[in-house]
Image 1 (cartoon, rainbow, N blue to C red):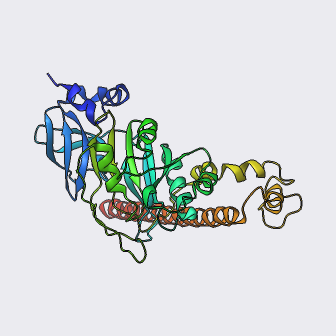
Image 2 (cartoon, rainbow, N blue to C red):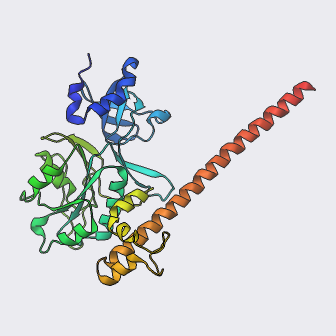
Image 3 (cartoon, rainbow, N blue to C red):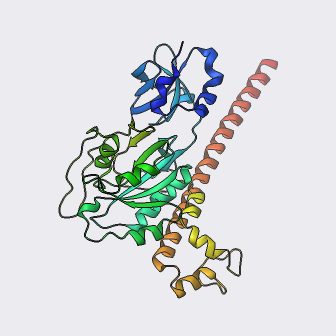
Length: 349
């Protein structure tokens, strides 16, 4: 008898159970990916934590990431990837028109920025777009509040409409009770190196689980102390995924995420004279009027335009790649058909 209750600390819910229901007769057991390591992964199973193999040739299990729910056979080989509820995806660092999934089945995304350094609103907006697009609920966390002279909490809140914004100190405990209260389900931490993600993760876990390191005094940047995405159960329920620092936050198919991130601009745009207003120099543009009146910062409109252009460029590039792939497939089919026709004709002779 499989003891599914042992998976509850790792996020097992009625919804996940329903996704697995169709696989009961296979003899496979459900498991959650705790950490990926090339063609193997650490998994939480009904019998405990173990090591599983992830054959890359199997299209049902390609591209696994931390947070995924899978089905394992008796030999601890991943046989099936269960449908993802949410997925945090960015454009690959290589620049190829493909997505890299950072974490799956995430409910809350903590966007971490060190309050004692340069709080980059544009970077926060990028990460917000990724979080909103994933389907998870973002929370902006200004870490290291005890070291900050002036925390720009109001400016960050203005750049994150619809998202909770908090200033916390994992070292002193300031604000941690409020942060804990807004966490739900599986929580993923995103942010650059030096943002204090691992220190915050340890505080939430109540133990020194993840390695931490000091940032450089000159530029407040940190080194990658976290090198893998790893999932751990939280003491009060739910799970936590710590991630390595993000040097690059490229958007990936984030049109809806941008709408949520810049919901204030979208609201102004609804009053523009023209439905297809580009908010550039068109007459009757409510967005430009909001900038002129001071209701909307010029910086925010510039960030909106930049991210929109980037997302549109990547979408066009991806469409071109898909068209090229379809063309290659059809050419292969045509060659096969011509070969088969010639073979048929030669047999008739």
